[in-house]
View (tube, rainbow, N blue to C red):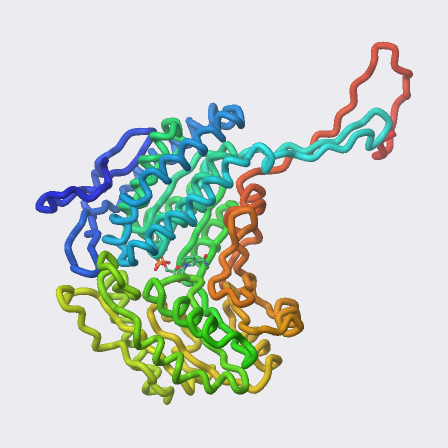
Length: 508
Ligand code: NAD
């Protein structure tokens, strides 16, 4: 396999581009190391593709679209059925590579793949998902119906934190709708993504239908501005996502941009204490806090304030270690740069007067002294003007705010510019109903810490966490990756009555 880890790590592999069904060695002079964040071992080198290579990938997509768009829906669907079987078969092997390049635990890496696999399973239902509508006799002998047609070459730009799930949000759904695709994986951990791409080829995705280019800003900008790209799916930080949305929008493309977050968990004192504390710790520190749906703010309401010592004790118990080690709860951050940023934000919290209840800065992991580890870190006494509240930290740092009432908690969450996810912990149905109705956040969990919807629904982050109307997967993405054509038709019998000339806009 091109992108797998080889047992002999003395020879550092070069990640290939995929253009028109061929694995291509880039001619670029710019490369970046893919590094194991627990050990700093260089796993591979990834190219920053040249503009000619990006153009070639798009041109391959454009050529392949001519036949792929008319490939019968059943044939497209059967490729997805094969792909889901292959991903299932190779899941454990991919998880090992994913954990090595990203840092998350093996179990969480398997979860990353599984949540993507569910989207591939969903893609197998495209026969009914892409159906149009039909209305008979909208006027005398006139029928109107809709066709959902593919739009052309689409592109996807993915972040480092879910190298399996997020590429699988994108290319299977785009392709199964009859489009062709250019994928630009995260340059920080492209190896597991490439293993999935290899499986897509093995499943029968034809040459040119799926292409892959690697790189950073230049490649992304080239995709956002190229005339032949019709739609861009982006997932990543707010800064880059806003840039991509604006640039691609200015160039007439459909764009969906899923961005950063600050997810609040609101805890009422009537909640199930044990389950709630477990949920806060799991969602706050799991994947080292590097999930867009991680719980990063706990809002303790009324007497739930008293739960803070227990929260601290539970977080302090988590095991920080390499993701490959059994029993690990919290793995390393993706890069030294990410670690420096998180440490800087912790420092700012102390300076701005928050109480550092649990300090993960000096964690040392025997055998992995070079790893980018930060242990679980907990702040109380946090106010909404502090940087640890206003910024997405994207590390294992949970900040605790306290309010007196549910109304105050709702107002607090609604004032925060992000709208990705939130949760309410309570045993009161009335409180839960009030919360789901009044909260201005796209994904709400009731006693569920990470409410990422399954793929029959769509991912529905909102406000500052999303630009563009339609989200990934579910029915929304079928709308995103297709254009609706309405056909209004009438057929005449040879002996039909002469209606005469109609000079009005009305159908008769
Ligand atoms: P990132 O924005 O740094 O990178 C995302 C992609 O953009 C990568 O492919 C990268 O190569 C590219 N990129 C980086 N800098 C660029 C630039 N200046 N111009 C153009 N392209 C550029 O994000 P990341 O650090 O890889 O991922 C973490 C972020 O993603 C967090 O903010 C997280 O909340 C967010 N995220 C959001 C969701 C969601 O669904 N809302 C899901 C996962 C991650």
